[in-house]
Length: 150
Image (cartoon, rainbow, N blue to C red; front, side, top):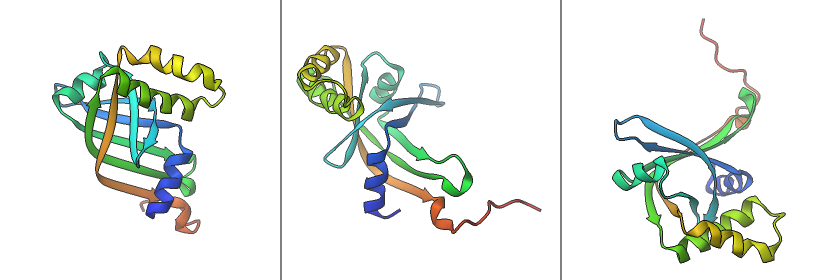
């Protein structure tokens, strides 16, 4: 995907799959809502969550955005990077507000700040600092059938 296609694809998505590394080296996967701030993926989650404990120990992170139900429609972006963590309530509030607005547009604006503020005390924000991006878009294959071994 081109840079423009990547930005459009990310903007269409609601859920972000996040992989961190457990203490024993195995992957820890979870799915979260996210926002895009200054071209970077951001999400907030409970400070005591496994993903935050993993990122405090090892900041490497992989994020996946994907869609499509049949082979000819599969599209995705994998982002490998490092996590920048923010736990001060003011910063968490600002990012949490963005995540709420992006994923819950039906929430009345007058309630967004209160909701984001209530989330701020026990949460940490993760800003994903991209190091490598891999993309795929099977819609560009021209309807070619999937490979089947002989």
